Image (cartoon, rainbow, N blue to C red):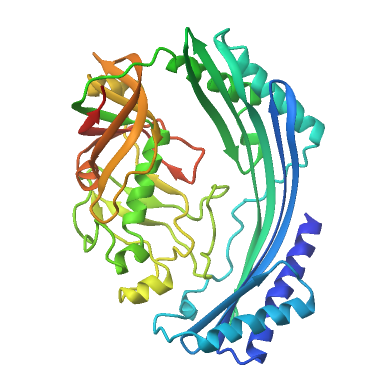
Amino acid sequence: MQDMKEKQGRLEQLVEDLLSEAKKQGATSAEAGVSSDAGLSVNVRLGEVETIEHTRDRGLGISVWFGHRKGSSSTSDFSGDAVRDAVRAACNIARYTSEDSCNGLADRELMAANPPDLDLYHPWNVEVEEAIALGIECEDAARSVDPRITNSEGASLNTHSGLQIYGNSHGFIGGYPSSRHSISCAVVGQEDDAMQRDYWYSTARSRDTLEPPDLVGKKAGERTLARLGARRIPTQEAPVIFQAEMAIGLMRSFIGAINGSALYRHSSFLMDHLGKQVFPKFVRIHEQPLLPGGLASAAFDSEGVATRTKDFITGGILQSYVLDSYSARKLNMQTTANAGGVRNLYIEPGDMDLEALLRTMDKGLLVTEMMGSGLNMVTGDYSRGAAGFWVEDGEIQYPVEEITIAGNLRQMFAGLQAVGKDLDRRSSIRTGSWLLEPMTIAGA
């Protein structure tokens, strides 16, 4: 840990040097970011090592303003000459760009002061041999689930640690180390002439909270087996449950629709919806950026603005957009401390698990996989390839494939019937499964 503190000190000094050089070269304001990352990735397949990759990356970026004219440059060279050259390149660009009154640093008074330690750094100094053994253990567990698991796409183990420092000419400099580890597996099953594949993975800040490799493999094998014997179904309208992993995509679409860059470009179906009903009254969607150990936790955003817990949806009503300082100025508003995105997004779960949601739906489609991208953000029209399971009498009957589901996100959000308590905790977006009103299902 002492080595990390010393490294952080050196990178903070580098940021100060960048900002000082920008001022020396005539910039009226500037911001700089420096990162240093290292990691290990091991992939195995059919019990043999496929790839071993050690990564070590570093880089710096500098943005300068001459009034409201902006220029940016970057380099991976941390030498004094490279720092001066990077600042000079950014300044040369800024001198010839057009004025934009919305350009500039976030307001000084919004900068984070005394940011807390959010417990994001849990390095895993795993040796290559151990990583290989864990990958093989994971894949073996998947392949041994059933003789119908006939092939494998492999298992992988990844570990990553990094340090990010940000500073600007308001006098703000802040940074923190972080870590992220994951293990995953995908296998192929065969029954008669039909083949199916599925996967499972676990990701966490600390290796202690990763799912065990054999459990990850077992889930991958069981999910693959469940898909064997998939059928097509006739075209119809029916209720749909998006399993938690798929509901995350709907949450991302919602955030994209209230993102400032989409709003000021008039390219969102939720234009001018602030203060209006978007979801049913039981829905609350909120952000928790200061969650200790969270996969997307941060005490300040990528402009140095202090983050805070906030609601985007309360009682189904849109309370806030997702804004950085530039988009906020475009909309005559204030930044919501979301430069760089949202951090630890939650939708309040209900009291039903997935089995209870299936019973509530009674008859319809459980979606467990999506293919393609068929979203028109301007209109909200939604159409994507899907696979999953057909449900009758509240129970799964058989797997389905080669279908397309279609609707409109505005109606889908308004028609949300329930959110399950089966939270997927492997993402910076946490949600349970969603039960939606009938959608169009195009099949055979």
